[in-house]
Amino acid sequence: MSVTTLSTTPQEVSACGTSLVDVLDRVEADRRAVLLKALADPVRLQLLSIISAAPGREACVCDMTEAVQVSQPTVSHHLKTLVDAGLLTRERRGSWAWFRLDVEQLAAVRGFLA
Amino acid sequence: MSVTTLSTTPQEVSACGTSLVDVLDRVEADRRAVLLKALADPVRLQLLSIISAAPGREACVCDMTEAVQVSQPTVSHHLKTLVDAGLLTRERRGSWAWFRLDVEQLAAVRGFLA
DNA sequence: TGTCAATATGGACCATCGTCGATGTCGGTG
DNA sequence: CACCGACATCGACGATGGTCCATATTGACA
Image (spheres, rainbow over the protein chains, first blue to last red):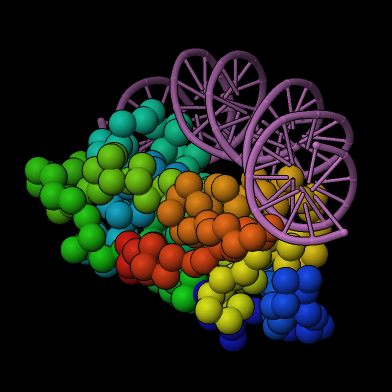
């Protein structure tokens, strides 16, 4: 979380003598929290690890329902959460739905955690 | 989220022909989710940004209660969450409580998101 | 067109989370 | 010792989240 990633707000000096240079504004904080919330679930981390480790960084749902200890609707729900957050993209191929990792979005998360 | 950060599980071949090399095991996924949940809140991101931008990467509570639009008990609660997750350390100096960023823990998060 | 397999959606339930006001605790200072 | 300021804790409340079962939808294929 470097200084350069933070928005500029008026400089102040507090009661205990510290000078506050910068505060992350609420709008940007909300945006980042949405991404982190999408990542902050063990099942979703497992799903991401499957996709990330698969050739081409993509996998179909049938692979994932077998590898994770939750029901198929729950897997589908988690995948939707990740797609909504922009961390995955969905593509239909015949009967199967394939999910691909958005590496730029994930890099953005790493970026604002620096 | 590179392959090297994932635990090894038996190799399989799924219905749609993909070979599953690795799945992140549930215990490790839970550990990582705890860290990400601690980060996944806009107010906590603001608090971290204040601490991270402050000289010495530390700040006292009085600085933060002024910069964030929630009550003092809520700030205290969020700081406790971050300390419990190991992302911050607390230190008492006279009347004031100072919080310091644990840069290694944050780097660990960036690490398993690679 | 009818059926089946793969995936998505809806509704319900319980647990967890974010927030607040009130109050407790601790340290400094008169 | 008494008081005051800084911070933590408690208890409560509404909101959100993860999970399931049941069911709808979609696409392939006979």
